Amino acid sequence: MSLSFHKMHANGDDFVIVDSRNSANPITSALAQRLGDWHRGIGFNQLAVMLDCDDAVARLMFWNADGSTLDACGSATRGAADRLMRESNTTSIALRTNRGLLTCERTSTGTISVNMGEPLFGWSDIPLAQELDTAVLPLADGPAACSMGNPHCTYFVDDLTAVDIASLGPTIETNPLFPLKTNVHFVQIINRKHIRLRIWERGGGIPLGSGSCSCGAAVNGIRRGLLDNSVEVECDGGSVTVEWDGVGPVFLIGPVETTFSGTIHDSSFRL
Image (cartoon, rainbow, N blue to C red):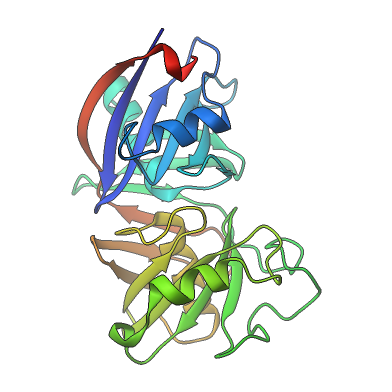
């Protein structure tokens, strides 16, 4: 058996695209974990599978490298949109995810813009373990929480270089307040249009960037009145733009690139 794939990245936030249109979905939790292994598989932050869909060009399903699933991945959504727009020679498509129907466009500069849907702020939407004000959580330093289809917890700090993300990140990710765990953001505000963001990603560790985390961090900053409605989010691997008017959907705009494509032939993957 064999599995064809495309390895891509968005400012270093790497992901794998598997095109399973016109065929059964080959990915299981165990297979995603095996493929995500940097030493024995392909290695990725997220895996996206493109499936047939009646009301969109494709339906996307996402996995983390630890084999867990997620409902949103801004980087891999942009990557899938890039490939599908090239395939159909168009500059706009719709993709179906568990977040709903997402409109994707190629901008005049070649970057990919995705309507990521409206952020959710209800405690049960994130979810939290109990009913709380999600604008200021009862944790040290009072972070904010929201959902972009996956949970986000945002800390605003004065000096990002002083934060030990490898130590703090997993502790916050697994705090009992977050029954499904959470992505953790550490944000230093450069000005009202520019933030510096570092991330502890749920199920993934410290990535060079993350589309949905960039959205969650910007949304929580706008929500608190700290940022304007269009924000440059600078991650370790590069910058994206997040736009939110405070009411409607969030727009994520940034580059994607294909690193390489290949086919795995290995009976141990049990495809």
